[in-house]
Every structure is written in structure tokens, then in C-alpha cells.
Image 1 (cartoon, rainbow, N blue to C red):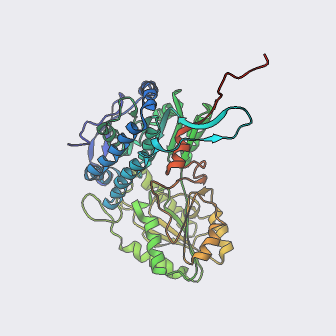
Image 2 (cartoon, rainbow, N blue to C red; image 1 turned 120 degrees about the horizontal axis):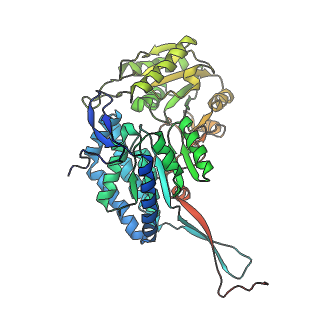
Image 3 (cartoon, rainbow, N blue to C red; image 1 turned 135 degrees about the horizontal axis):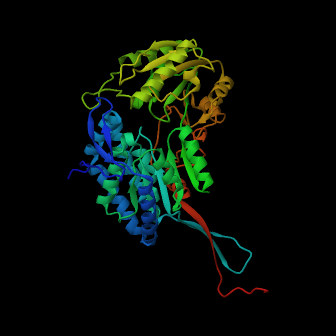
Length: 475
């Protein structure tokens, strides 16, 4: 069957062109939701959720297992869409479908996972804390890893007995929305539990504000996340915010420079740097910084850039003109402030080449700001104390990589403020079983991934007491 046949579903607010960023070609049209569509979907979701929560755990698990199998069955077709719609390379698209399957398989274990504990009590009764479904969960996901960053909330939320309102980024509404809806439909998910609602900011506000919604899961920019958090707080709703990053890669003295430059290139240039975990700051010991800059620049010069749907390239297009202009602006302002372009630095729309910058300081725009493009700023440090200070001198706290001697790396790891620390790996990494999230401007400390984090995210704790007989009261 053709999983993603046009016309694509959505809402009643007209249609939006699905555009290939590499060519500008229209690939199809997806329906746009309206706030009225959201209100209707939320009401249906709340009704369907009550029956779904009462289903046997094995029934919910079976749907999630089947969904995992379908991601494997339809992997090639979904990957084609991720390549063309998101501008992803083929290997990156493969990571998305592989992760989607793994996330669903992991979620399939959640319905039979222990969901509570027995508490001590001073009364003649049993005292229990049990986890119950939150109800209706809204998921708002971005364009860069459209499938993974949606399915990582959708799958565990459904597995734990919730219904879901899914608002994908309009730029990747097929690979990050339609594909998920179609897979769960084919997997046998009952009607009314998953609602696809592509749309603009008004639709985003509606999926946050709908009274039926208990939990909001948002992945995107820090600026947008602040607005979502404020709106959710006004309704006293729990909100999980996974936001931006300006992640540091620290190269310790004595590290193999060739291997370190390979790790740094992967961390900065994968998917054109359009990843929240992208290596945005390269911090190299002063004894090796010149060698590292040249090795990294040589890799940047050799990486092929082009349309990933037509050739085997390392970098594809930037998602749209606005993002390309942003990357260009950050680099231009950095050069004006004294930075030196060692490789790249000149856009060729819709592409931006792998770029290496040196000659930066604390105030250089490319060092302080999240670029979300294939730019690798490099600076030197003198000792471990200075390295820790520079790493922590950022509003963000998502991911840190440390390359080199493990004992020294462990000492530095204890000093940095970050949701993730990877020793002898670069900054980009995720697994279905790992709790994922950041601190500071990178998020509100929430986590996705692994049974403990997912149960915490998508259920509520209920205190339950049981007495053998009716309790006596003095009134």
C-alpha cells in the first residue's frame, strides 16, 4: 500500500503546500486545522480516552508493537518523505525511522510496567501511590527531526492510556504528522485517540489552551517555548519543554586531533546543524587549537553539499529562506566583530556550506547564540577551570561532549551544567531508553525516553487508601 498518498489529512482551514526545500517543488498539500477543529478534536479525544484507559494493558501494548513493526515495513517510503520534505540526508532519515520503531517497541512495554508503590502509613489501612493516565496530551513538534521529535511523546502517551492532539510543524507536516497518523491507524488504534492538527500559532495556542488537555509536550525554540510555558501556566497545566541549545565540545590536551575533528564535524554539520544538540561551541586546549582548526576546516571543505534526493551528500538544504538568512546574519555579524572564516561562510541558496570560525571571544554572536546551521566556532582554553567556566557561560544547558582522557573528562563532567554529558562522543545523541532533556534555556528539566521518565511525563500520581471496614469519625 502507499502509506502517504495525497491528499493528506488535516483540518478544515484550507490547505498548505508541502514544499521540497532543495528545489522549491510542491510535493502535495496538507489540510490546515483551525482553532474550531482543535476544540472538536479535544472533545472527541477526551471521550475516546476514557475507554482506551480501561482497555487491558495487553491491548494497548499490541497496538504499539504493531506500530513499531509498521515503521520497519514502511521505512523506505517514510525516509523518502523525510529526505524531500525536511532536506535530510538518507542516513539521517534512516535514523528517524529506526528510532520511531524503537520508541514504539519501548512504549509497548509501558502498559505492563509497574505503575505505583505501596506507602507506609500510621493508619489501619493500605496506602498506595498509583500512576493513572493524564487524559489528553498535546504534542507540538518541530521540523528538524520531524518524526522522532513527535513520536517520542505520541507513543508513550498513547501506551499509558492517554489520547493525543498532535500539532506538527507545517514545513514537515507529512513526515512529522501524517505518517504517524497513518501508521497508528493501520496499527489498529481506536478512532478518536490521535488527532492530527497542522496549523499556525493560533492552532498551537488552541492545543495548549483546550480545557480537556492536561499535559503539553513542546519541542522547539526557546522563544516559542516561553510562550507555550506561559500559556500552560495560566491554565495550571503541566508542560514539558525541550528547547534550544548552544552545546559545547571540549577537546582535552593530548587528544587525537584527527579523531576529535571527525567528532566535531559530525556534531556541527549533521543535518546542516539544524539540531538542538548540535555542537555549537568547540573548545580546544591551547596546545592543539591551531591543529584542530585546520583539521576541522579541511573536513568542512571536503564535505559534499547538495540535494539529498538526487545524490549522496553530507549536507542538504537549509529548511527555508528565513533560516538561511538567520545563519548568514549570525556569521556576518561575527566576522564584523572580528571572527575569521577558515572554511565556508558564503551561502548558496538553499544551501549553507560547512563553516569553521576562529578568533572568537565571549561576546561573538556565533559563540553566544544558537545558530541552527552548519557553523563550527572554535576557541582555545588554558586549563580545566577555564574550560568549565566557558562551558557554563551560556543560558543553555542541553548537551556537552568531552573528548580525551577519561579521568580528566570525569572531573570536568562534574563541573558542567547540562542535561547530558557525553565522554568521548560529540554532543548529538539519543536513544529510546535514555531520559532526554535540558536545563536553563534548554528546557524546564522535563525528560522523555525510558520507562521512568515517560511514566512521569504522561501520567498523574493518585494517592489511594483502602480500609477493611468503614472508618469511624467523631462527627
